[in-house]
Amino acid sequence: MTRWLALALTLCSLLLVAPAHACGIYAASVSLGSSNSLSLRTTQQQAAAGAGLSCPGVLQVLAAAYVRVTLQNAGTLALQDGQGNQIPFSIYRDSGYSQTLVAGQPQQLDAINLVALGGSSSAIGLYFRTNPGPNVPAGTYTATITLRWDWAICTVGALNLCSWSRSPGLTQSCLPICGAPTNWGSGSLATLTITLVVTKACRIDTLPAVDFGANALISQFSAQQRTFAVTCTSTEGYTLTFDDGQNYLAPWRRLRNGSDYLRYNLYHNGSSLIWNSGSPLSASGTGDSQTFTYQAILDPSQANAPVGVYTDNVLLIINY
Figure 1 (cartoon, rainbow, N blue to C red):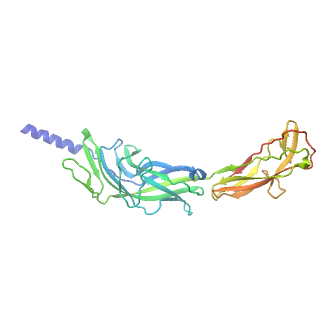
Figure 2: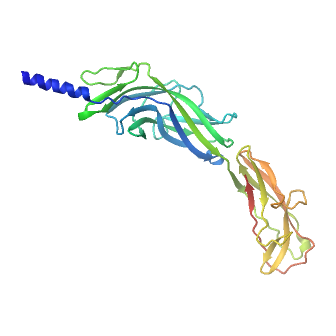
Figure 3: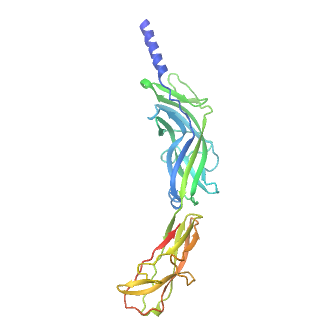
């Protein structure tokens, strides 16, 4: 009889020394990285990150867990730059980005993603992604959200013994083993700060070639008008210019056919001003495609040239 009592006391002692990895709330920061404004319209920025509930000392899959999260923020979630510009985003509870958190609706996590916080701590992870389509200026965009966490988490201690950590007010029936919560209690609130950096960008959308056609005499060639399109970040200033081409001899650009040349230039539309680095065109981006027109004109005073195909390559340069 004495032997069994001693064995029981030893077991109780082992249960008491099993370390309790208490989970708790922390202020979380989520980075959605950096994207230029044009890519952001078609390519969503996303991240998996710790979302305010951490479990010190836990780096492996939890032995057992009942975890529920509730988004406290009403309305559309949006990152803001403080100037009235917004980037809508959503929070998901699954890695497939299909199960969205809805304000005021508690959602129990079926699968728990652990995100390492450094040291020996891990956090319960959620998934964050921007919505497609925003047309915004460059800048740093942030949002602050509040999540309510309810949890009963069993972490493994010494001798694989279970140690339960519970959120405020949560109760479980533990006869003979602890199961699903019978009362989720009041939970705990965590604050998350989400950040996305948007950089400026420009692109050339269309740039048609110039073809003067085929004629025998210089006097028979007419001016050619062309329109090109570019897109630049909303509100960002930029300049447009053409380089001097491959055969420049001041003040003319030149088309070449072997050792023969035809002088020409590119002009601002409706103007005699040559469009080059000395006379760029200034504009302000809208985030949408913008069009610009120029004229290509052969020097009418030059002598007629031998038969052949004359070409030049000119670069359109955007400075922003």
